[in-house]
Length: 342
Image 1 (tube, rainbow, N blue to C red):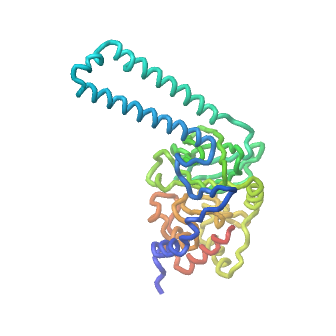
Image 2 (spheres, one colour):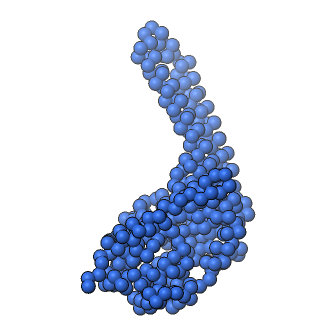
Image 3 (cartoon, helix red, strand yellow):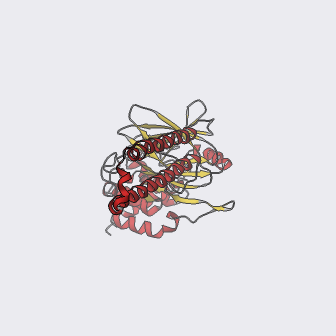
């Protein structure tokens, strides 16, 4: 029997798992948790709130100046003999020199004070190294002395209400790390290390995006920041440090064998198995992540199978090859195994 095409597998998988892609809001205190949010105007952290405040002030000031210019223009056109005062030196000096200098000086000082406070660094509750790749995000959780404690990809978990330090690097071209609801942008430049801190004020899932054009699949280079309670963060961190669990179904066991026999371990690591590749994302706990393909598709067996079979059609130019030689049953087995890596 002819195997199902990769595109059909992906579409079917997305359809049957739609409820897991758009999660419902969860209560947190008196306010709903913001899920899958990417907006610079709906904020959930002090850094982003400072940027939003400055943005609204700039918008309001710009609108006021625009209306003032319109009023002067209307008066100059329809004012008749009463518009003569607008041609004097005093008008030019006050409205053409003094007022712009005063307004811009106040905005500059206020902006520097606001961003200066948001850029202040404290004692971080976690230190996370994020490395821009082509086109995905390598995420390393660091210990107190900078040692690597955990490796993940395309999803970052942080404790709520506590500052987190991000160490940003790039292995290829310039990327830009941006989580609009939590903080501003910061570039990731090859050969340079950039650092900044921000925190989430409430639990939720916040979407981030590469904000610097970095190549053909720049638009499909997203990630998620999951803010959880501090106790839950420590529990999650301990669970993620464990090796991959053994498959519990016959199909999953077959999938593990196929995963290793197909050479996937040359590029990917699954701790606890012979797979130890460093080129691609660490897959040890892939099943616990919310998306695949750097935020491009929901994480379920159907989309995983479609991604394996047709990665170059879904994300052309990515380093992940398409395994179009695998049949439908083989794809289902590998997807079953990977989805079981919680």
